[in-house]
Length: 348
Figure 1 (cartoon, rainbow, N blue to C red):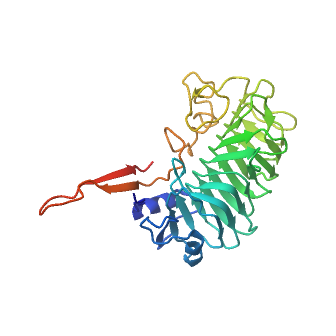
Figure 2: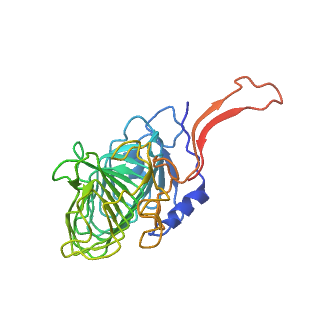
């Protein structure tokens, strides 16, 4: 079996142009795998990053083995195969100075991701699974990710007062550890937190926010988690389903928030927390159906940045991918055709 990622340049450029940070012209495309049997251009990710030019696109093949710790000090686009089923895993990612406009896509980040530079901007993290994201700089877009915090994990996202931050259409899972937060440490008016779902893996409600001031907090679902931790925030069209809290409170303000009503997900699999086999679309009878601030659904399937996969939670990038290719007829006669069987997926 060989893993091959099908590269279509026009699709790649279309993806890059969809980001909020502009497209990258004249970029090289580099494939990397840590499996020697794969057909790739490189077999070491950090070496590939070091030798790449600013603006290059690096495709990271799925592997059962992590690619380890990496450091990025230039503008790059890293695209993995996803975080569930076909997985591209990296232990830690450190973004240094000169890493403006770096895009991380379809990656399973198992330990932490840190934007160290305070002067760079234009980061996009999409369709990734991670814990321990620490921000600096400004203009940061985090979309369609699965983010863990709590026992066995670190904090989810520490904003660290970065400016122009959009955290939208993500799934947060807190493993009920006091002091471990899903989102925290922000005092900027330019922070938008919208259309996310916040879960706790315990039936008891638990606070997952800390020290968030002046942000906009719209169209989110708080499922078995407390809403404490906010001050002077504009809070609109959220669902709080934990039997206790309501929004807004204290010096927070806003309207059209829904208290104590089940958001009615399509399929919770009999649980009270996220599972990869669930379906977190809203039923037609849900109080959040078309009830968002923009008249789309509350939760991850609303807004213009809606969760990209109609069914399933895989982190697969929006590219056609060939995972396996096998020649069916091993012996081919004269003027005969070679038959090839592919394990592939469409662009989503």
